[in-house]
Image (cartoon, rainbow, N blue to C red; front, side, top):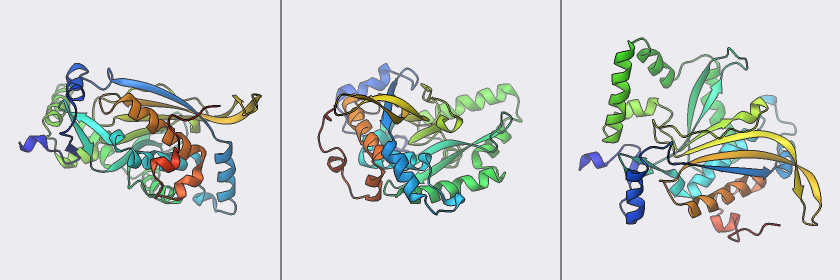
Length: 295
């Protein structure tokens, strides 16, 4: 049937029966959300950033956010089941890696926000990611409205009953894989992962829900850098620079074991950013032992 196909993904037809029935038991992303908090030591990352940014112009500096985006996109490529989503009670493998995030045009309470979606291959270095993000963000901060802003402004001029009908229609079209591709492209919630950098506001990450609209099976909230007590290899408690993350995951997309190992790949890529310079590394290169040996 033609409606089994989508412009943004390929139907996964070889799932075991238990995985196929789960979307009928857990019908929405909110009730299917699993929250996975992580604490990542970043002393080596901060030292690496200081080294690579030495002598760089201010507008070409690499930030923590660039490293996190590079690590997330690389992880998605290496662990492709995290790039699956549920639509119409079926499981699809996304055809591309995209990450959406919010851009605040002005850092003030009254500053308006817009959303940006960036497409990656998963092979990018951190500097490649910096250039991609800068190219996507520059027009937004200059005041240019993106497709999502224009779409929202267009619909919000209509009466509430009409908006209710449009919202319902979008849900039904998406359920039956009949949502027009241009409309899907204008809504940043159709993405591999949604990322929010609350650390830029100096706060810890929230336990954020997944969105019912769109297809994002992963939401990553990045917290601030702060000193936290850590037990070193000698058993002494020391203060280390850490970042807390909270990953919100749609458990229907893949199983918990797969997510657990995926989290370890992400942790290693962030805490050891030199790994991101070699796109040829495999999961076994990044996580040589599994389960990892904790001190």
